[in-house]
Image 1 (spheres, helix red, strand yellow):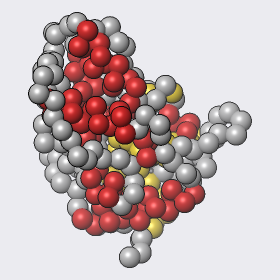
Image 2: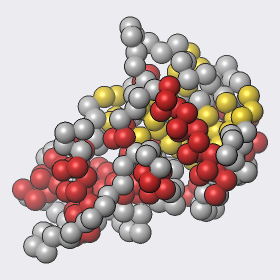
Image 3: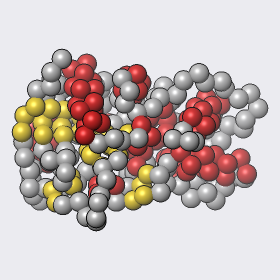
Image 4: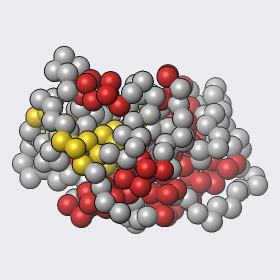
Length: 248
């Protein structure tokens, strides 16, 4: 299976700042616009000041927008595993989809096939830790929902791209946590989410910030239920992933 690549360059790019910058993060987005052409036009509009390295159309075509050695402007204010300014160390892939605002729908098989091929090529060029293959909502949970709960993270993990929870045993005695809860159980939840990679202050209060981080976690790792409630299933997945990645 080959990848159909079309060059679609933009001036919305600059040099990665710093010495010996290592590209070690891959961030997925959806375009959140009514068409592929609208997304491409926005990423090539100097006034918009946004771009990505790649854009995958619904027919599987891969548009090469920014060379990977340069910095694209896709993540904005972001945080993952103790680091901010993720544009500087990441590659951004936009996947064409209207998004939650314009009629969110499943990503096409052609898109997912092309994403698998492209990611394998990217990972040969840049050895990226599976923990650092994330969605925009993971690195900016208070602002973003993309690529969303319909993105096939399980397929990617099965292809050796990123991680996905397996062999989950739900705890029977854990407390279900939700907005306005507080106490040591909430602080432990916040600690686990922060340890996994999310930017979250550990104050023991289940406020809107914690709720949004839990929703981001669910969009990626528990897609059947995205409600911001840390129920038994979400807790089990979080515990599994924290334990699985502790030495990675």
